[in-house]
Image 1 (cartoon, rainbow, N blue to C red):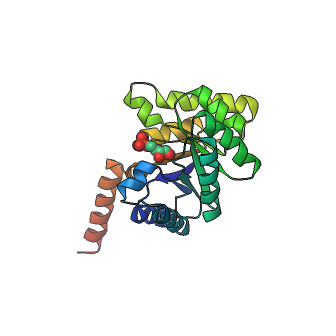
Image 2: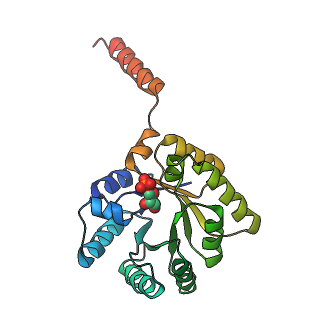
Image 3: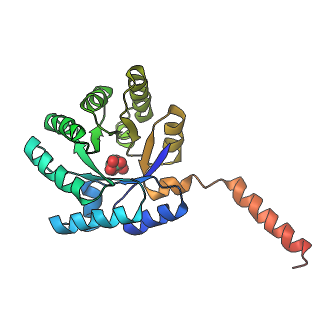
Length: 219
Ligand code: E4P
């Protein structure tokens, strides 16, 4: 399973990249705003800066929701850097635009997906990635991981090439659940990725090893 980091924060992207486990980045307008990035030129420059840190795909989201606007914005984003994936919302004109981009060889990430039907449409339109938001479903007491399972089954039934990018991942249990089900990618905050490191027996075991080593060495 590929690990994407879900942030527009350059320091966190670099930290994950330096850990050696990062396969890509996802951003969204809220994450860009959180970093104080606004204005067309600043936004484009920020995407370029992200592309220069990572080796993998970088999702950059369009703001337009009409077909012509999505095409115009998406083409400008795709021209920025070969790593850019155009992130398009799951709306009617978005589906049409994904079809257009896929015919042009431009990678897409269909975002704001909350049902298996939406994921089926995204795959039929030729999306490179589909992003079901599991955390936000859990927030409304709907089983987010259950949706990943449903989409996996449907895509495998028909051999769809669209990659399942489990989004809105909040913690290590989400990551492990995605890995067990067979999501192709998960995207989450740095804290969720780093939480995989943690086990109390690792900490106490290491403390014991170091203490025994020091004792044997007479320190
Ligand atoms: C997906 O690509 C989104 O950026 C993201 O995962 C949303 O996560 P949130 O629900 O934690 O905002």
